[in-house]
Image (tube, rainbow, N blue to C red):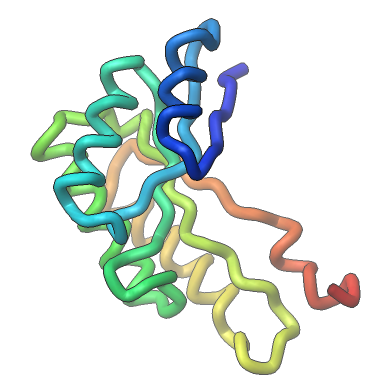
Length: 142
């Protein structure tokens, strides 16, 4: 079972990659940090053999529409594959599930589902992660 590392401090992730036994997953990076930094972080993950969760957060913030989710993830896939030859099986997209039932977010969960379908078609070999709890957030009174 892979060990997932998650921190806002890159040094903590690096230390975890250095000492964790076996395969790790780094959760996560996003293109919002800029292409150079995005590739630097991904390169370091690859050096340790870690898989990578790529968040659908682009230069304009969180990708909420279907088009934005697909654009940000496809752009990330192209960068990782063409610049670093990052293994597609080590790329895990988080297309950011938005809670259903919130009046201002109607249709966002459908955008997530449709984006995943399109990305499966256009980015061969990748995996996906989605917070199922986010789908039910509004129904739990939170």
